[in-house]
Image 1 (cartoon, helix red, strand yellow):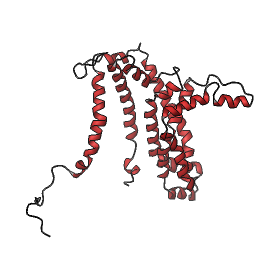
Image 2: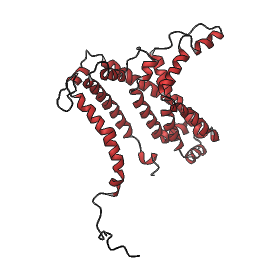
Image 3: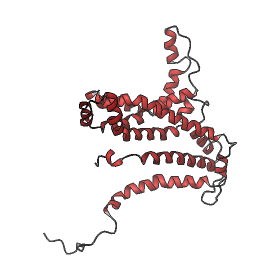
Image 4: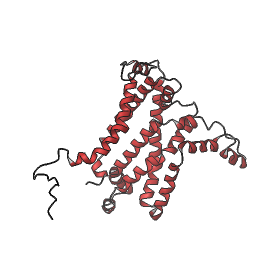
Length: 297
């Protein structure tokens, strides 16, 4: 059927000045610009403003960074605590999540969806509510103390408000963020390769080391990266379960923006943390085969 006379026609051989891929990516680009790039640039602008001022975009000074990198400044202890706790959480969850992930992929069978739902359900409850639940469990006179007294064991003391309890809280909160990328990685291992290696006489340890672990490594690395990034910026676990025994960098940033009313210093601290975590993310992402993860080959 012929087109109406007033319908504009594109001449053969002409193309739109905007490639189709770019047109399709416009919503994502706008989201990244207004949701990530613009806030990050604002924080960067505040970080070079005069200390204890709001002269953003009108002043330039490196005094805030000089204060951070001053050897006499104790803020580096907060960086050390945050990065060390994040690394420990990654190590603990690697050991704790791998058996569970392997079971979800190979053992639990038709029960795997139900177990996954149980593991995901705590994410629907506020993190602070869950952490205060652990406070009620471990506090003197709480649930654990009452259960132990029934069996004639002495009262529980010195459990809360310690670095170890902070580490426990972070491991508990970020368990799912390590587990499910690891499940994805293990699910990507073809069973044919495992069966072929077994038929060729490879031991179970050799199959795990030479076949399963390398092929599952992209998912494992994603879980490690996600867990480390979240744990490095954690604040609730250290405040609720750790008290003042551990001061993380996120607490110093919060203090600078609130009680100290020194937004430029808080912004500079945030930018240093972003650079450290961003460098790690780029290092890990450079070793991931995203095409294979997305199933493109």
